[in-house]
Structures are given as structure tokens and as C-alpha cells.
Amino acid sequence: MLSIGDNYVTNFSFTQDQVNAFAELTGDTNPIHIDEEFASKTPFKKPIMHGFLSASIFSRVLGTEFPGNGSVYLSQQMDFLRPMFVEEEYEASFEITEIDSRRKTAIIKSTITSLVNKKVMVKGEAKIMHKELIA
Image 1 (cartoon, rainbow, N blue to C red):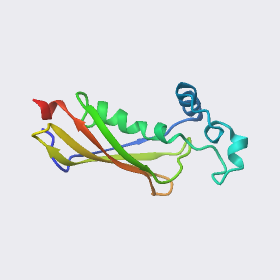
Image 2: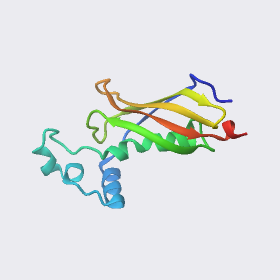
Image 3: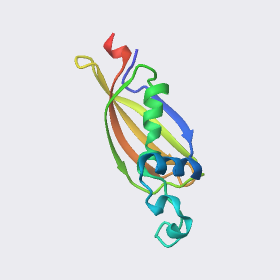
Image 4: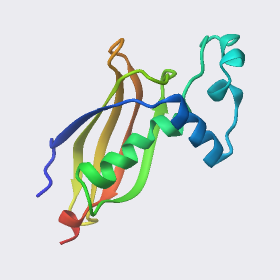
């Protein structure tokens, strides 16, 4: 049974090949993501990941790991606070902050933190339905 305070943490990173594949899949070929020479002339000095690629960890975790299979994503609010880079390690953390048993939903705080500098990169919250709330 899901409870307020339940939480989950996982580490992840993305490669430049994955960023390039995401650019091709979505059509977002902004050179800030895929062109090292272009990116070197920006304030970031190197390519940055697409915000939605970095936040795709939320979908992976909520759909398959925590609370896991049976989740239905209803919404996601998020703020992209800092640029994220390929080959760097990040920690994604999740915590159930609200459960609405009448509506069969849960609110889950979602955060991505850099393991390099310990800063929060992305923060937000998701609303989901889950099989344990529907039953």
C-alpha cells in the first residue's frame, strides 16, 4: 500500500549518443545540445542535455520502478534550475507527499541533484494514479 513519505532514489547519466538520438527523435536539433564547437562559444562551454531528456528519468521511474508498474502519469510540474551535461552522474529522488484516496491519485515530489556539485538541477512534482490506489 502506498503511504505518504514513501520514497525512492536512483542514480543515472546520459551519453552524447543518447542526446543525439533524442535530438533526432524529437526534431530538437538545437546545436547547444549536439554541436561541441557551437556549445563552446556559449556560457555553458560544452553541450547541455535537453531538459526533457534529463526529466525523462521521472517517466522511467514513475512508470516502472516507484511506485512502479500500474502507474498512470496525470501531470508533471517541473523547473529546470541548472544545465545538465552528458557523462555526469545525477541522483533522482522521489517522495510521496499527498494521497487523495477519493480521486485515486498521489502527488510525488521529484528532484534531480548533481552528484558532482550536490546542486538541485530539476525539481517538481508529479500527479499519478496507481493500481494500489484504484483497487
